[in-house]
Length: 511
Image 1 (cartoon, helix red, strand yellow):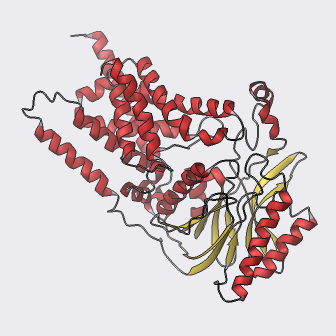
Image 2 (cartoon, rainbow, N blue to C red):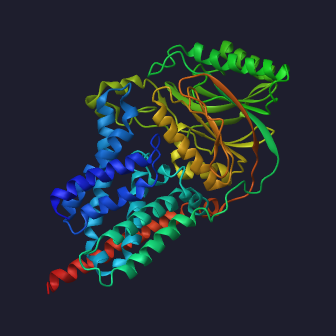
Image 3 (cartoon, rainbow, N blue to C red):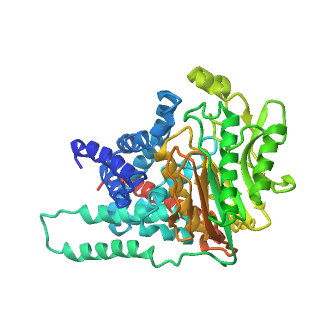
């Protein structure tokens, strides 16, 4: 492809990928974006492929992550976007590097494209500081028929299927159409392969694994006085919002207009006043739990264990007895530069905004498996839903329902909807009903086949009550764990090694 076409193709690739994600939700454009980037980088030097991949990455991540600059300024957003674009630069270089391999074995082009994307995401999901999986191809497919593939191999298999479809599109298009003789047979074969990929998703059964009893769950979205980094400057007001909304729910239950919940879920940061150390905050939560007559999962900031340290926790508060200290989950993956600051002295030289994080959040060490008495919950907090292993650990630990406690008050509706798309994938992946409880929205319930029910608006108060079916079995994805990703990433390494061998042979014998 001439460079004057490759540059706009790379930019269009990033924009097509962007449009596939919420809030746009044009999921068929994801394979188109994959195909455009692969076409732009094909047969180029790795350095040129990296440059084109970087352009695609900027076009994707800068607008996708725009919500990170709403209250922190442009610098953190810019640095994060450029860092994420760097991984697509690596993908572009890898795509250019394997060009001799796919030219020699054209039928392998879709497979190679698919495994390179999985390998790139595997790296990006883990580095640096534990990685940042936002913008994975799999998370763009929440309304796609490919979503059900998550039950077989989790997010890596969905990403592979999307990239495989993009590779098929590319292989279909990359030919000399001026010479039609003999073209239509491979075109028909590739078109049939593309149709088979798309049809594979709906063929996967989805639903509760080992479905059992149902429980009635209430999500309380209390809202905050104002959006922004200082959303909880009025911490008592945020706590009061959630208490008062729960008390109003209890009034409706007493009047017979609302089903009595077996469990109430409050979001992350619903009590940034430590209720274990502040008697007033504890008394208000006790009032809410006793009045509604059901345990409340409270999103709380707890002080300690050390001086100047805090924990982001899900804490079960029972009616009649108060906090159950045996049922506490501490967030295992605090967000770097938001909940803790690595390399603080160096980070301060880049931006003084890091000093807004006055106390570093301490990570927990155990999965969020909480026994409420009516159901065993798999609790993850905020961005943790993006990490495969953190969610899976709760299911293998016995979780019957998946719960995502989050606070979107420092972001916007686009970020909340992107997060809800991840919850949908997790529900299908593990065959579990799931819910997302947010301070400001979007909150909602998700069935094990990925459908959303009772979704709330953004920046509003709401209470939603639904029945949820408990699950206790395992999907193939839950059983397999990380191994599908390992296998696909290993194939990516094998493709790069194979291309290296071909390149060395060319150097020895240019003829």
